[in-house]
Image 1 (cartoon, rainbow over the protein chains, first blue to last red):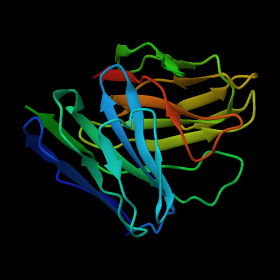
Image 2: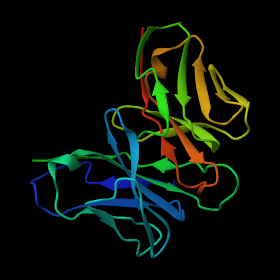
Image 3: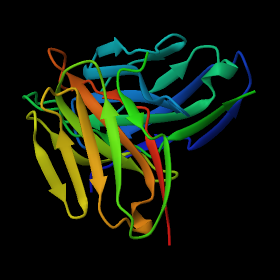
Length: 116
Length: 113
Protein backbone atom coordinates (compact mmCIF):
# COMPACT_ATOMS: atom_id res chain seq x y z
CA UNK A 1 0.00 0.00 0.00
CA UNK A 2 1.12 3.52 -0.75
CA UNK A 3 2.14 5.53 2.27
CA UNK A 4 3.97 8.59 3.54
CA UNK A 5 6.65 8.17 6.19
CA UNK A 6 8.67 10.55 8.31
CA UNK A 7 11.93 10.03 10.15
CA UNK A 8 12.99 10.34 12.82
CA UNK A 9 9.76 10.25 14.85
CA UNK A 10 11.44 11.99 17.76
CA UNK A 11 14.54 14.20 17.80
CA UNK A 12 16.35 16.16 20.48
CA UNK A 13 18.98 18.63 19.35
CA UNK A 14 20.88 21.63 20.61
CA UNK A 15 20.53 25.25 19.63
CA UNK A 16 22.64 26.11 16.59
CA UNK A 17 22.85 22.61 15.15
CA UNK A 18 21.68 21.76 11.64
CA UNK A 19 18.84 19.24 11.60
CA UNK A 20 17.24 17.43 8.67
CA UNK A 21 13.83 15.78 8.86
CA UNK A 22 13.03 13.20 6.21
CA UNK A 23 9.74 12.72 4.36
CA UNK A 24 9.15 9.93 1.87
CA UNK A 25 5.95 9.16 -0.03
CA UNK A 26 5.13 6.24 -2.30
CA UNK A 27 1.88 7.74 -3.67
CA UNK A 28 3.76 9.21 -6.65
CA UNK A 29 2.14 12.54 -5.77
CA UNK A 30 3.31 15.76 -7.38
CA UNK A 31 2.68 17.98 -4.36
CA UNK A 32 4.44 17.78 -1.02
CA UNK A 33 4.11 20.04 2.01
CA UNK A 34 5.79 20.64 5.36
CA UNK A 35 3.78 21.99 8.32
CA UNK A 36 4.50 22.68 11.93
CA UNK A 37 1.86 22.20 14.60
CA UNK A 38 1.84 24.26 17.78
CA UNK A 39 -0.88 24.60 20.38
CA UNK A 40 -3.31 27.35 19.47
CA UNK A 41 -2.03 27.69 15.90
CA UNK A 42 -3.30 24.59 14.15
CA UNK A 43 -1.06 23.64 11.23
CA UNK A 44 1.13 26.30 9.65
CA UNK A 45 2.74 25.85 6.25
CA UNK A 46 6.55 26.01 6.16
CA UNK A 47 7.46 25.05 2.58
CA UNK A 48 5.80 23.24 -0.29
CA UNK A 49 6.67 21.75 -3.65
CA UNK A 50 4.57 21.15 -6.76
CA UNK A 51 7.12 18.86 -8.41
CA UNK A 52 10.77 17.97 -8.86
CA UNK A 53 13.06 21.01 -8.59
CA UNK A 54 10.13 23.19 -7.49
CA UNK A 55 10.05 24.65 -3.96
CA UNK A 56 8.04 27.52 -2.46
CA UNK A 57 7.97 29.35 0.85
CA UNK A 58 4.99 29.08 3.14
CA UNK A 59 3.87 31.42 5.90
CA UNK A 60 6.57 30.41 8.44
CA UNK A 61 9.60 29.62 6.26
CA UNK A 62 12.32 31.60 8.05
CA UNK A 63 15.09 29.30 9.31
CA UNK A 64 13.94 26.35 7.18
CA UNK A 65 14.85 25.06 3.72
CA UNK A 66 13.75 22.22 1.46
CA UNK A 67 14.91 20.63 -1.77
CA UNK A 68 13.06 18.32 -4.17
CA UNK A 69 15.42 16.18 -6.21
CA UNK A 70 12.92 13.38 -6.88
CA UNK A 71 9.18 12.78 -6.66
CA UNK A 72 9.28 10.70 -3.47
CA UNK A 73 11.27 12.86 -1.04
CA UNK A 74 11.09 16.36 0.45
CA UNK A 75 13.61 16.71 3.29
CA UNK A 76 13.21 19.69 5.63
CA UNK A 77 16.40 21.30 6.96
CA UNK A 78 16.66 23.58 9.95
CA UNK A 79 19.80 25.53 9.15
CA UNK A 80 20.61 26.53 12.74
CA UNK A 81 18.07 25.15 15.18
CA UNK A 82 16.44 27.58 17.62
CA UNK A 83 14.29 26.90 20.67
CA UNK A 84 11.37 28.56 18.84
CA UNK A 85 11.52 25.68 16.37
CA UNK A 86 10.54 23.14 19.01
CA UNK A 87 7.35 21.73 17.53
CA UNK A 88 5.69 18.77 15.88
CA UNK A 89 6.43 18.66 12.16
CA UNK A 90 4.11 17.06 9.61
CA UNK A 91 4.80 16.20 6.02
CA UNK A 92 1.90 15.80 3.60
CA UNK A 93 1.37 15.03 -0.05
CA UNK A 94 -1.43 15.46 -2.57
CA UNK A 95 -1.94 14.25 -6.09
CA UNK A 96 -1.51 17.61 -7.80
CA UNK A 97 -3.75 17.15 -10.81
CA UNK A 98 -5.54 20.47 -10.33
CA UNK A 99 -9.25 21.05 -10.54
CA UNK A 100 -11.83 23.13 -8.74
CA UNK A 101 -11.81 21.67 -5.24
CA UNK A 102 -9.01 21.31 -2.74
CA UNK A 103 -7.30 17.94 -3.03
CA UNK A 104 -7.00 15.49 -0.19
CA UNK A 105 -3.73 15.89 1.64
CA UNK A 106 -2.25 12.69 3.06
CA UNK A 107 -0.19 13.23 6.18
CA UNK A 108 2.73 11.41 7.68
CA UNK A 109 2.79 10.47 11.38
CA UNK A 110 4.82 13.51 12.39
CA UNK A 111 8.24 14.24 13.89
CA UNK A 112 8.43 15.65 17.40
CA UNK A 113 11.44 17.97 17.62
CA UNK A 114 12.85 19.42 20.82
CA UNK A 115 15.54 22.09 20.58
CA UNK A 116 17.44 22.65 23.82
CA UNK B 1 -3.48 36.74 12.10
CA UNK B 2 -5.24 33.39 11.77
CA UNK B 3 -7.46 33.33 8.68
CA UNK B 4 -9.61 30.47 9.93
CA UNK B 5 -10.83 30.63 13.52
CA UNK B 6 -12.41 27.58 15.10
CA UNK B 7 -14.66 27.49 18.13
CA UNK B 8 -14.73 26.17 20.67
CA UNK B 9 -11.05 25.41 21.19
CA UNK B 10 -11.80 22.64 23.68
CA UNK B 11 -14.94 20.59 24.23
CA UNK B 12 -15.53 17.82 26.75
CA UNK B 13 -18.89 16.07 26.59
CA UNK B 14 -20.60 12.87 27.66
CA UNK B 15 -21.30 9.99 25.30
CA UNK B 16 -24.64 10.47 23.55
CA UNK B 17 -24.59 14.28 23.54
CA UNK B 18 -24.73 16.40 20.39
CA UNK B 19 -22.20 19.09 19.54
CA UNK B 20 -21.33 21.64 16.89
CA UNK B 21 -17.91 22.97 15.94
CA UNK B 22 -17.56 26.20 13.99
CA UNK B 23 -14.97 27.39 11.50
CA UNK B 24 -15.14 31.10 10.61
CA UNK B 25 -13.26 33.50 8.39
CA UNK B 26 -13.60 36.92 6.80
CA UNK B 27 -12.13 35.47 3.59
CA UNK B 28 -13.91 33.53 0.87
CA UNK B 29 -12.82 29.98 0.18
CA UNK B 30 -13.30 27.99 -3.02
CA UNK B 31 -13.60 24.82 -0.96
CA UNK B 32 -13.26 23.76 2.62
CA UNK B 33 -12.18 20.53 4.24
CA UNK B 34 -12.48 18.95 7.67
CA UNK B 35 -9.76 16.69 9.06
CA UNK B 36 -9.61 14.64 12.25
CA UNK B 37 -6.36 14.00 14.04
CA UNK B 38 -5.82 11.37 16.72
CA UNK B 39 -2.95 11.52 19.23
CA UNK B 40 0.43 10.66 17.73
CA UNK B 41 -0.91 10.62 14.17
CA UNK B 42 -1.32 12.96 11.25
CA UNK B 43 -4.67 14.47 10.26
CA UNK B 44 -7.02 12.40 8.10
CA UNK B 45 -9.55 13.93 5.72
CA UNK B 46 -13.23 13.57 6.66
CA UNK B 47 -14.95 15.64 3.97
CA UNK B 48 -14.57 18.35 1.31
CA UNK B 49 -17.36 20.88 0.67
CA UNK B 50 -17.31 22.97 -2.46
CA UNK B 51 -20.62 24.74 -3.04
CA UNK B 52 -21.98 27.54 -0.85
CA UNK B 53 -24.80 26.15 1.31
CA UNK B 54 -23.69 22.57 0.70
CA UNK B 55 -24.50 19.99 3.37
CA UNK B 56 -22.75 16.64 3.55
CA UNK B 57 -23.44 13.79 5.95
CA UNK B 58 -20.99 11.13 7.04
CA UNK B 59 -22.89 8.76 9.36
CA UNK B 60 -23.42 10.84 12.55
CA UNK B 61 -21.38 13.79 11.26
CA UNK B 62 -23.02 16.62 9.31
CA UNK B 63 -20.90 19.24 7.57
CA UNK B 64 -22.19 22.53 6.20
CA UNK B 65 -20.50 25.16 4.04
CA UNK B 66 -21.82 28.69 4.54
CA UNK B 67 -23.75 30.36 1.75
CA UNK B 68 -21.03 32.99 1.34
CA UNK B 69 -18.28 30.34 1.55
CA UNK B 70 -16.65 32.10 4.49
CA UNK B 71 -17.59 29.64 7.21
CA UNK B 72 -18.40 26.01 7.93
CA UNK B 73 -19.77 23.89 10.73
CA UNK B 74 -19.43 20.29 11.86
CA UNK B 75 -22.30 18.78 13.84
CA UNK B 76 -21.94 15.43 15.59
CA UNK B 77 -25.05 13.60 16.72
CA UNK B 78 -24.91 11.20 19.66
CA UNK B 79 -21.17 11.53 20.17
CA UNK B 80 -19.17 8.40 20.96
CA UNK B 81 -15.75 7.98 22.61
CA UNK B 82 -14.36 7.07 19.19
CA UNK B 83 -15.11 10.64 18.04
CA UNK B 84 -12.45 11.94 20.42
CA UNK B 85 -9.72 13.85 18.61
CA UNK B 86 -8.59 17.16 17.19
CA UNK B 87 -10.85 18.50 14.45
CA UNK B 88 -9.27 20.84 11.93
CA UNK B 89 -10.92 22.82 9.19
CA UNK B 90 -8.83 23.79 6.17
CA UNK B 91 -9.65 26.00 3.24
CA UNK B 92 -8.38 26.74 -0.22
CA UNK B 93 -8.65 30.50 -0.70
CA UNK B 94 -10.84 31.74 -3.54
CA UNK B 95 -8.56 32.84 -6.37
CA UNK B 96 -5.59 31.08 -4.83
CA UNK B 97 -4.01 27.71 -5.47
CA UNK B 98 -6.44 24.89 -4.70
CA UNK B 99 -3.50 22.76 -3.62
CA UNK B 100 -2.43 25.15 -0.87
CA UNK B 101 -4.52 24.90 2.29
CA UNK B 102 -4.95 27.25 5.23
CA UNK B 103 -5.68 25.37 8.42
CA UNK B 104 -7.86 26.50 11.28
CA UNK B 105 -6.80 26.68 14.90
CA UNK B 106 -8.39 23.31 15.76
CA UNK B 107 -11.04 22.03 18.18
CA UNK B 108 -10.00 19.38 20.68
CA UNK B 109 -12.96 17.11 21.45
CA UNK B 110 -13.08 14.63 24.32
CA UNK B 111 -16.08 12.31 24.58
CA UNK B 112 -16.37 10.67 27.98
CA UNK B 113 -17.96 7.20 28.19
